[in-house]
Length: 375
Image (cartoon, rainbow, N blue to C red; front, top):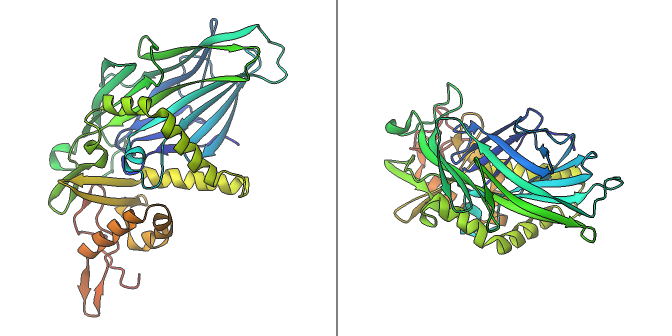
């Protein structure tokens, strides 16, 4: 498949990667778009003195041949290099498993690299050895600290362009504090200058070897307003820090991997045409990237942004999406119905629902100015 922009995200947590391989760019944020920023992310392999990476950085030579495949859990890039005689499959995958709140909202994604010999290649050493690595270089405004198995970066996330009125609390309108980090899922990685690496060795009797990292984000701020109350991310009740998120990704890798594979298999099991599978995968990740699952003192809030105006759960949109919500996670639909009941409006002709429940980071009962009695 040709290269194009896609996203990898989690349910309700806003941790989002926007991957643009055709433009050589990657955006990352624990708060989603438009509170994201471009990040120089070098992910690839080192064999001897040769480096090959995905085109999200210009620090090293990019793989000369690259194909993209969408997954319900994310995206896979199949990278070929005839000079090195390798086929490297790099996957960015986030966990979504219906009704598993902790796994689905945990703000991280796995980055795996699977190395195999390129079919038909003349380069057949006794053992193919090298390193897989992931190196991050954000802007200078971010502070760096070393964590167990990797690095963390802390700073302020601001809207990427003028004109994005997200209706943030007054003290956060210039940006929301947050952090992101990278760590190896496996023990004892090599840590360098903002680089995490793992050695690999592919013997003649092996088809492939695979190693894995995790990218994660964290924001503990109360930035989403429901009525007069301020809410924070649901996951903050499960994880107290970025380090706890990364530790969870490492310790639960086996079980989470099985759940991702099982869910991917439901959609990508071959029962549907390939183009349809790809479209569903793109739609699911786009949906997840626009969800909010927030909480305050035991009361949860769930909504989904719609359109460029970022309206929270317009009734005319959720009316159609409700079929998916009911099938995969009926409790979320129940939450939406209760929220709409709190936003009932009245007119000369009776009661009706507003078009939406608010804009941006607010659900304040001030929807779009035009009512939707017909809807």
